[in-house]
Length: 606
Image (cartoon, rainbow, N blue to C red; front, side, top):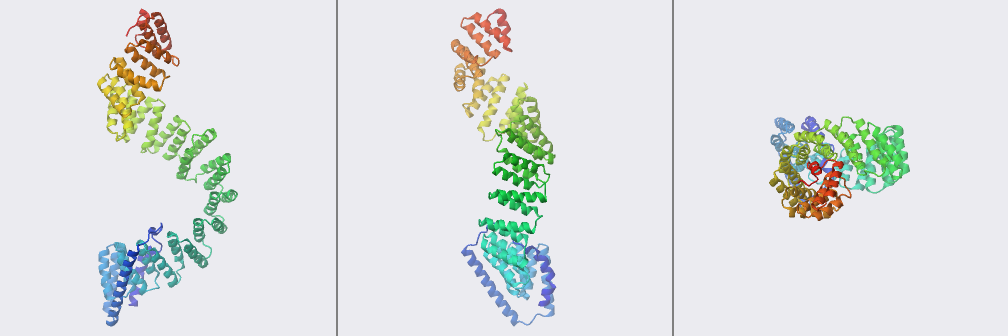
């Protein structure tokens, strides 16, 4: 059967390439099998060993395979390998098991059956046949690698560790698998065993970067800082021009408050690569820890000036930095803006560069500049609703109605199911004196609100104003009532609702109650005092109205308030004083359409 093994070596090599490294499953902290599961697997293995032994006895008692039988076995094997490559594992196993029936003690056949079972998801049978392959040929590295892979997939990490150890011991020139064994120990957090394995690898292969790097990570996990730093220095000496090792060492010094060493090593990196952004970032952090903000800022600027600094790294830094803004020190705010500008300069076609710069300007109270940056971000990527939302919020805060209307119209083409966009679109239309369009937008947006009583209240408040504008008073009152149900203390609704009721002369006691509630909370607000005074006026409580208006006039020169004061004085039998106030109102600016008539006839018109 030796001839079969030799002729099939190509197939084994081709199929075994994937077993040279541990699987990803072993990379995390592994979970172990329960004792019950281990006993079940041990029982299965014993049964397979028994069957194999019986098969060998039968094979030994049977006459040797004829030439024709050997050729048939090889043909079955080749067919099985072919179907494995074609990923038809059912047919592959059918052919391979027929070959196995003729030659059960052939390691290559057991190996291939194990692989086919592994690829088809039958891990238990895969494990049994892989174990058999290893026992039948203890010199083949591929057999061990397949077995270890199967064991790791079954969470048999101790078994996989033993398999690698046996491989290294039994198979000549297999020292390279010490790295796999070390990784497996690391995955199980067996740090001393991993270190011992890496020491063996170092004895065999000499100074290897991977060994030093892994040992360094182990020492850090063991809180053995000096040993970790020594490995780092060893890496640097062996690779003086390898910047990543130098920077990793500088970072380690910085993280452990070894600031002079961190500066020394970071500057070493800069001598090799003067524009290295990571070195500047490390120095910036060191100077920050030392309480030297000017030097830290300079290093940050140098880092951000480098095209080599990745944009995602820039965004990460700026996000963290923005949390410190706004700062009472303008130099800190300016630094944020400078770093954002440097990001745009290096990435002029990246939407997130402009968006991040917009955030920085928002935090430093530069709303107009922020909006312009957000709009530039939308030129390169208009798919981010959050950016549209920021633009709309700023339009609203700046009271730029035309921009608010234009931007909500554009955003709604992309995000027609966002209720907040409909809300601001409705508000913009109301401000543009297009109440019907405003009502349409608000009614549609309100239907999109899900489980948000506060937002519903905002829609209802605006609808109350909009319906009043169109003189649909029943709907206006209903909308205000709904808004107050969501928030009984909504100041805007309480004030507007009571004022509009007073203008109509309806539900005046209710209007007095609502307006009084507002004035109690804001006793010096001239707008709210004027509303309250007008409700009292409509109730013919002229003395109360006079008191409220006199409080309002302490802080306002609004023509309407002055005119109302004149009306109250007239009702109190003081016509001369009333005319004097009406004249003041004319000088103050826009008042009611009746003002000129009042002045001409020197009498009250309502």
